[in-house]
Image 1: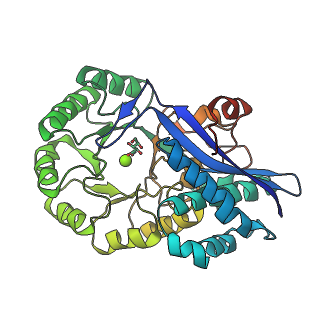
Image 2: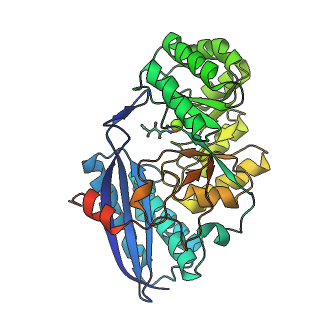
Image 3: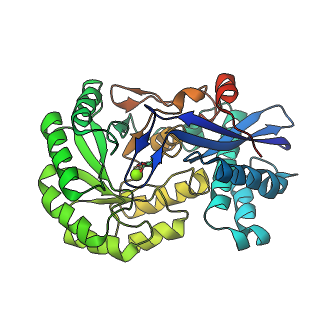
Length: 370
Ligand code: 0YR
Ligand code: MG
């Protein structure tokens, strides 16, 4: 399978309501920056990374795909994903400027497009190609009801609506003040009762003393995890928090490599492992992190930078994956959307990775490449 053309794209798709906020970002759109790979035998593969829809940096990613990595696919058998991945990461010029950031996000999009192609070539959904279905159902938890921008009353109402709609897990953002966040969480826990899992996400805003104070008061809330309590690269801080609190630590959505995860494993600084195919140079590297988590007997809960299009396949195929984040913003822009029914993700049936955009979405949401 040989490349015929590579066509980058940028889509900006609105979030629920006019905007949402976590502790560090307020956004109105999700950026879907990726590529179409056309093959000489007439197939099209699609992959993308996820951004906060900042056009100048989205254009850098698209240009990196087009001008730096696309030429490396020339003449390659596109089935050889691992080899192409190694070629991209070890390319002397790219390694010098890369290993994290825009270059890795660009590689993520390409790796996902290659897996999409590989699955389409054998006319199977990606989960089948990754080794088959290893669990009956993938449980979804809803993040879209828990933004910091949602006021206290609507937070409780939204959580209740999600539970009535079948969700057995929700996540609430924290990182404003400890007092406000605790008040909101207590109200949510009272409303949803003890049987729905409740996770919190700080998006790396607080320092260690603030996290310790929060955890001490939050111990009665039966939290599934405290996600990104501290700055993303602070291994020692997470290890200290993990030691001082009984609330499990989740992290990984901003880590770029297997090596970055390895540090957290080695320091006992992580309980829930949250890699993201759109951040970590694709499915190829995330699979390695899942294997590493499995060998440490730690659960994986992928971060929905792909809004679950690809992670549904991964979660059905890898035994370490326990639960998957659900945010519905971009799903309807794809021909095979990531759907949740009665609180569980539907097993995809279409060939590929679920990354083929609809014509309507391309038409409606496309942004200029330059
Ligand atoms: C909004 N999920 C997250 C969104 C989300 C962020 O800034 O990007 O909250 O990625 O932390 O777990
Ligand atoms: Mg998060």
